[in-house]
Structure formats: structure tokens, C-alpha cells
Image (cartoon, rainbow, N blue to C red; front, side):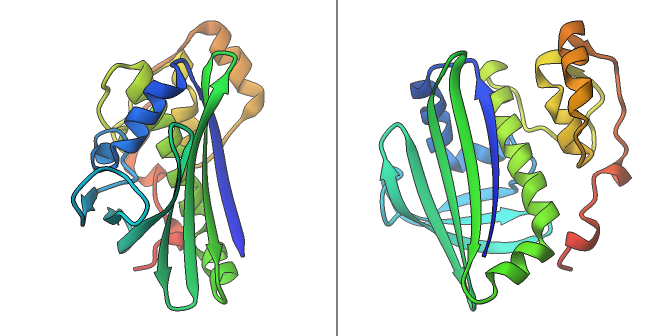
Length: 200
């Protein structure tokens, strides 16, 4: 078994975050980790609802909602031979508004192996989704973050640069936040690549 998780604070009430998070068919508008999400059933997000998700460098996968705690969290699961993948999306009140936690768990006989093989890609995608959600809400409808074309990031979203390059330098973050802006930084296409994580 292998688990990956990301947390991020968003300057908005939990209700607003929950509303955006539940519009799963629109996720591709604010995170480049998602190509498309197709709802396979009618009706709102609910237990038993099925979605087909397409992501870069990954095969299309069908996910089924298995748990919902209204306005707090939902869980969906995808099954393949030997692997059960579970994604949890939760939001809770925090000092500055809300705290979002995104978790992906690989279970089953092959869960550990898949987690090791796609670990870096999984962590990168979770980070892109967390930061993308923050920008979507605080930026009032910003479009999907594409690290291949990112050239400028304002101070509050300095994490985007760390995520896009697949690295973090925590000791730099306080300085960048105090400055309130990040000088233009071009991230070339080759800096955002799956490397060994690419299953193709």
C-alpha cells in the first residue's frame, strides 16, 4: 500500500471551496493534471456516481463515489486488476478560511508497486490540483495552470513554481512571500516531464 497527500490553505469559506470542488466536470478548467472528466450518470455528485477521468500520461479510468460527508469531504475509488485506488477530497475551516486536503491511496496486491512506479507523478498531480483549486477560488475563475507555459506567479501562489518543477525549497518561501511577488521565471517544457513515471 502507498499513500500520497497534499494540504493547502485557501482564503475562502469552506462552503465556497466545497462548491468548486464538487463541480468535478470542470476540474480541467483549473488544473492541467486533468484532461477531462465525464459524468457517466445523471444527477449531482452522490454515492454511486461514476466518472471517467482522463489525465496526461495515464489511461482513462472510471471512478465511483463511495463516500460523501456533505460540505466536508467525498471519496471515490477506481479498480484495476490487483490495484484499488482511493481518492479523498476534504475541506475544513481554518484560520484564514479553509484548509483542503487531497489524498490518494494505492491498495490491493499491487498497490505498493504502482505507488512506487507512479509516486512522483501522483505527488505532482496532487500538488497541481491543490494549487489550481486555490488559484481558481482566490483568483475568481483563473484558467487551468499549465506549468509548461507558466512565466509569472504572484507571491501568494509561489507554490506553483515549486510544483511545476517537481521540487520545493521551503527556506525560500518566507522570503518570496515577504516580497509579495515572484520575478518572472520561465519554466521550459523539459522541466515538467514525467521521466520514469511515464507509463508509455
